[in-house]
Image 1 (spheres, rainbow, N blue to C red):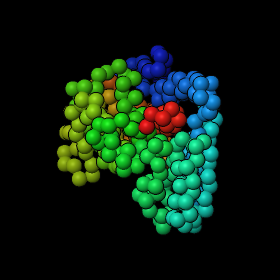
Image 2: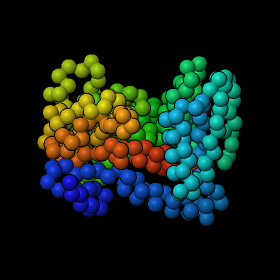
Image 3: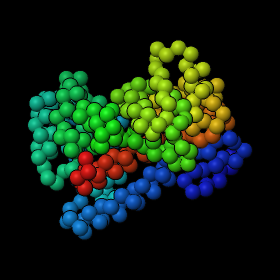
Length: 296
């Protein structure tokens, strides 16, 4: 397979779709963020600070946290990782969050999910100061998103909208179908697409005639968490396909879309890995810089 790189989109010769290169797009944004941080340091005498709390030793969470820490270091964000035992009480965790809320050197706070069963994630997320809620999960933050007020946008949906815009296609007037209704991706990205003046259909496990609905989508966002569930029969010719799925199968990351089939039908498509993934951390960095500038 011959791949020709043109800017931030990789065109696969003899295939219909252009590959939306999330890694390249993320790198472009990070270069800009590094310049913003350098300017902040010169003009105001400080750099953004991000605190990440990791409870327990979940292997996937440890990888995510290391990647976030590395990304912060690369662009000049001060990273503080707080490791807590998996048996830590909810009260102790909330006390730590309260300390960070009052720490002037910390502009963004993130509690890595999932949390142990004895800790209520809603209580933990609600304890974060909304001005430092760079993950975009606080009820006040999500409320602002719903009513169209300015605030932090959740990282993965924010990255998805950026990737769609990188295709050069106007979102306004398009029919967008989102498969998945989670609070982390499906619901917020649906609201954000609606805000961009798309006509939005949300599908889920109880949806009837899923294939027929998906085939009518100009923009198809797949966030099911079920590897390779969506093939070319679900895709409209020339559609923009955003694959949010990341499931490890036999040691390899698989998306929710059967890429090898979908690439012949779509107009643009994100790969897994290298599509949405790099954008999620980059949007976290962007939100942290935004918090440091006081533009919550």
